[in-house]
Length: 284
Image 1 (cartoon, rainbow, N blue to C red):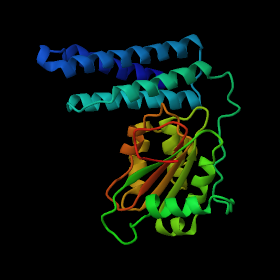
Image 2 (spheres, rainbow, N blue to C red; image 1 turned 180 degrees about the vertical axis):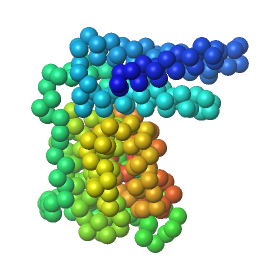
Image 3 (cartoon, rainbow, N blue to C red; image 1 turned 180 degrees about the horizontal axis):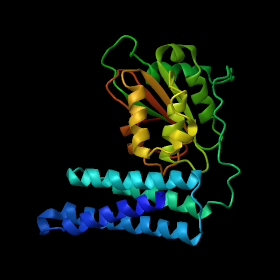
Image 4 (tube, one colour; image 1 turned 30 degrees about the vertical axis):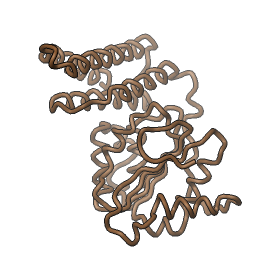
């Protein structure tokens, strides 16, 4: 079913290109955008071929990958129809990562999950000053005093083993942070991380999430686009802190950030990564 939906949206991209050819040199952006869309179509068709060549059965991870691709194709169509600029570089990078992971699919799925038990009270020697500094300058700052502190992203960047996750965990579990934010969620990267999986984990962690209404299976059967809408709805009107631990450089963070409501003062998204992302501030 997911493969058929992907083929359908790929055809929609093809139809868009056919019905919107570049017209004259004054439309240089459209010429470039159409070429980039052709690259997206080519990459997605190759992924469909991978599914068929490897004879992959429709399972949980495969459906997550295909759902992300369907979301990306619809995202491109939406922006194209409204003449919005599209960051094709980051989109193609994310599609390329999905392609690479799908080539590995089935080889080793034993390390698909990272530990996300971050609610334990841990006192790590040597981080107290850094934790207090980041909380009062980047995470909360003057937000308790000012109503003008808007949504911000923060990046803790450093080499593997440098203590990024430990520092983020200390911030996440700090009493001041717990009191300040009405909603908190922590998501660690896994081997096959997808936008769909990311949205599901956020929904399941948000306080007051109606667990009796949606099971894990029902969430997994939803489209990435619908899950994105649910994340926005659950966080709407709440001050929140979301931590994404070990964010892969290829992830299309713009799609994730688009799901987050921005109108509430002092909401924060904290990334840890060994790569520099275009969003947020570096904290090393």
